[in-house]
Image (cartoon, rainbow, N blue to C red; front, side, top):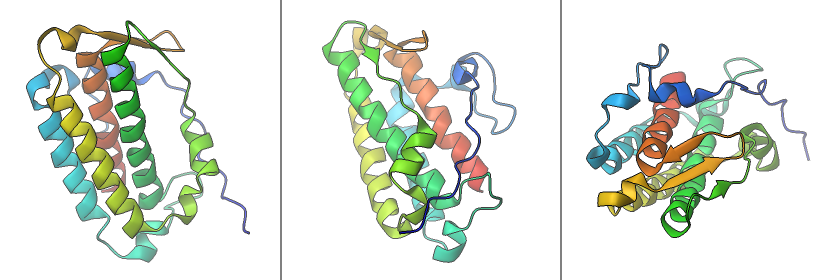
Length: 178
């Protein structure tokens, strides 16, 4: 079996700043997102990813450079982010201030062989994961938006800030591939 390509260099930035400032690359403004629209915005973004993944398979699998993921690899990442955030949202709703286990996105890419993923399969899986997460955010109401959770690096979130932070990821990566 062939070896996976080297992952891009690890992104060591603390991206929580996007909660307070506009992302200069993709233009996302987390502070302006109304919590009542989280599910709707996730659905819109998911559908945009589905359109992108309808392109030429060879193009979707090709890295623009050795240290940048292909569109399919980015889509795998977005799919996995949706799955991870679904688990974390469930924890935040069920437990008081849970600590989230660390997640290394580059390790996940290598272990799950994003580089070998079938774009058509990823398209279906991303759609399922994105719509499921959107539906889950639609059920959050009232004081639940203030429930807390924290990452192992010390970042603290309410469900509302967690949702806004999450939205930046698929929006930014869609910008990366389009």
